[in-house]
Image (cartoon, rainbow, N blue to C red; front, side, top):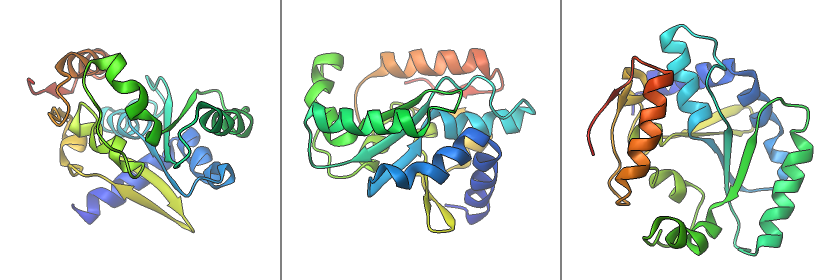
Length: 189
């Protein structure tokens, strides 16, 4: 992965004040393995590239974490803590324990999700490889996770990730993104 693109990503992500505040406060949730991911990262880049307001069109801010306790009560406790921690932000922060995803995924999408051992397993399985990007603060720096690289993200190329056969989800998400960011070019499933 290009260190220049990684540097550019971190700079752009931090221009979005909601991303920065979430990154700054996330440690208070007490999750060891966590990432701010998906739309709030990718769409900040698309807004920057398109010369739009950095916050435009971003529907939510996804916070993935991994914890071995897969009970609803444990996840709900983290969600409630996050709700209080981010209550002053005018955005929705969606908090999900990736260890719980295999428990409900098949019922929702008709296929098994597979085993999860870390938070990045969820990022690895996004239907669109282009937005499979996460960031997290570690001490004074921001760490980047991008299993498919960053070039497509900056170039506005939407590419499928066929790891899970859910083309309808890919088409739905990328269709909305193209309406919001017309410069994006979608590769077929």
